[in-house]
Image 1 (cartoon, one colour):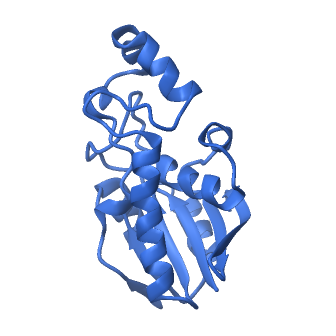
Image 2 (image 1 turned 180 degrees about the vertical axis):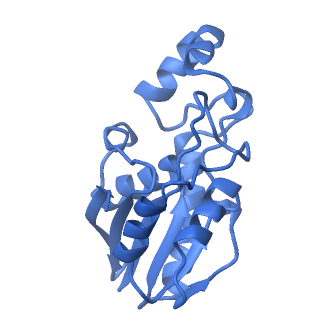
Length: 193
């Protein structure tokens, strides 16, 4: 049984699409970080996205008995392409039909020069499968991004991408997914300690 503790990185305070742009997280709420650290398992493997908002959050919540794995691009946020850095209203003005389809029929719809939900989910799923195979009896703390975590909620619940998007994933929250016998079971979504 591999138990995944998906942690969303600290807040960025950005008011625009943030995908592969490397913006820092605000990790100044030390009480919230301490509560999160206390909630996570004492002994675990820890991995994070290679983007600074995730890797710095992992640094902040890492305990002495956590074994850090290298940062990986496989659990980066979705690549929003030319939308990255634009406010949502600007994206709607620039690409009205495409931006509506991106949210209303997620799957194969992709931003210009970006990736679709299905492309991102395939990338993340492959990583999770590799870690599950390499560590079949471990706790994994994975510090990542809202889109990444929602792909795993989708997978674990067996729902559509559209249904997965209905779940909130707050900054510094934890989503717990247990893998056993090749099957995922979602135990907790968006727990904020």
